[in-house]
Length: 164
Image (cartoon, rainbow, N blue to C red; front, side, top):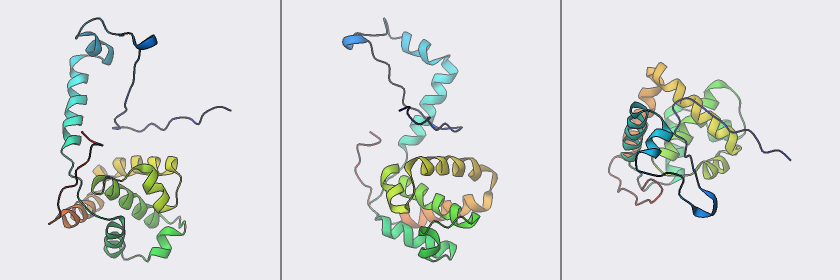
């Protein structure tokens, strides 16, 4: 049985693993990995994205707190969001909840998919669509930033080795 195709979206970071046979080195010197990745400009861009990613602050917050705050912000009942509603606003709310769960709560896509009653592949695609939509939709971007700030305020940072 063939594997499912990978999901790709613009602006995503991908973890590439290269290994030699039986643990042998695949690079002869320190410059080879950079040549493998591409030109210096590309490598600097990836390093910049990683440094921005490291600045994320995961706080001690429960999924229930995130979920309830999003419901209140958008004025939707839980039943409309969790029972597979397909209206545009409901889909957008699920995307925002998933994004906040990852950014603030440090939840994995698998855990978020379980909470939102979605497949992990669908959730990944939705997060990619939200990332594409935020730059062009200042109103939605403002709502997400306001939610992030209000949920993060006064909370302790959570220790995590996920982004170490």
